Length: 301
Image (cartoon, rainbow, N blue to C red; front, side, top):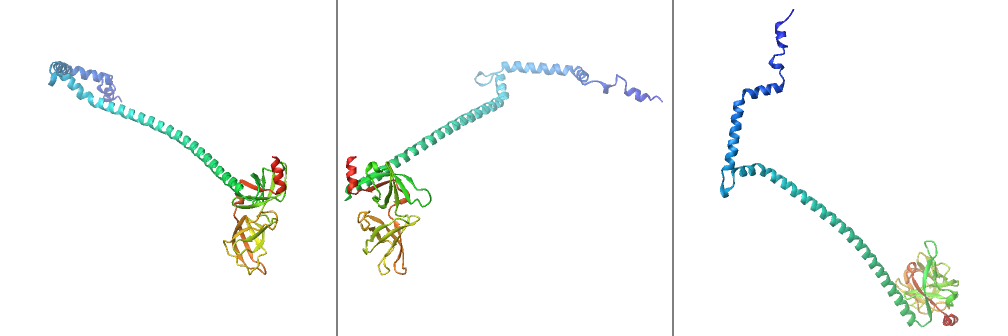
């Protein structure tokens, strides 16, 4: 059955089927006098703003323009200033970082130079002490540099840079201003091997400086020595100085050797541990004590 209401709802002329532009056009057409009036008033207002002036002959239109656009200008200026400050801050930070890097490099170079200067000063001071000791010593000696340590933790032998080219032979005493180092056991043309007093096969004739008791110093390893053949009746205390006796015909008499570290009684002889006066694990420059025949060889050089 045909429904007239449904037919009316789908007719093309229904207001609900009109498109939005048509509705807008109809609205404008219906209110055209109002829009014309508003346009006339706006034009009149603009003309008046151009004619009316305020203080200092400033036109009203300019005042309105300032009022309208001033917030935008302030915002834009604030944004521009903030951007400029941020850029300058970034530039300053970048330059500061570059300067810090340059200063770090200069500081590292300066520290390296100071370290080198310190090393040279220490070497000069060490050589000065060795040469002064050599000049005032009652025997002839030749200075030598340590060029190698024996392998292993004990390091009971070292190699020096003087040999037969300087008239060196075996069984020559090797010392420093601080004390006895050892003796030469092998000689080559340009080098010699030195057995340190801390080696168990070494032996040094010594005496205790306070009691004048004599004994034999042998190596005990670990940069220590042991003092043998001191009777239990002898008075020995930690801290007593140990010097060479000269009876071994290798080391001149009266050279410092070490200091008593520990003392204990044994069956017949005391058990005495001695710490060498010379830092045998940090040797750099030594003196080789020459005998009469070696002095003659040195005179040829």
